[in-house]
Length: 196
Image (cartoon, rainbow, N blue to C red; front, top):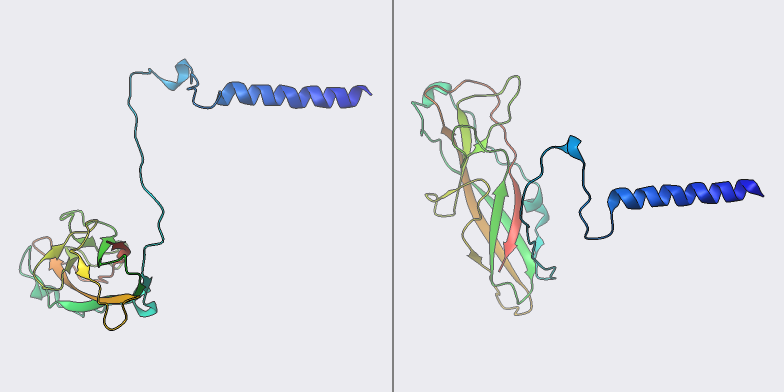
């Protein structure tokens, strides 16, 4: 009979010690002197919502490869030298009536020299002194990595229930230093769709 009571006492003891460590909901627990000196801070309010307002990404757009070509290192004659622009598309479909326009947030590794450019994958055998530039459909307006593109209208066509959009962007290599080192010049840009 003593064993069940001992087990119960042990369980209650563990629960009490956990409560002491975590503290009641909403109460800050003193981390102790070992944590360092504490001082006045502030607070962060997170806001947002969950909606059903979105389109479907075309399967060919979700994971694609864009070939920027092979370029001789001698082609680049200093920072800012750009290669030919290569188009690529992101298509969305089945857009509800609430979606009037679509934009894209491209993200990835920022180039160390020019934070607006997409960095080339580093490592053995990688090119150097060059990054990838993304551009809007006009082929002149740069899209900075981590920034949202301009809004593109959703085409309703003959069907008022759903819409679609075919967004065209461009990419090219851009020199970031005086000399470009030979090697693989690959990179990955992740993207999220922005619906309005």
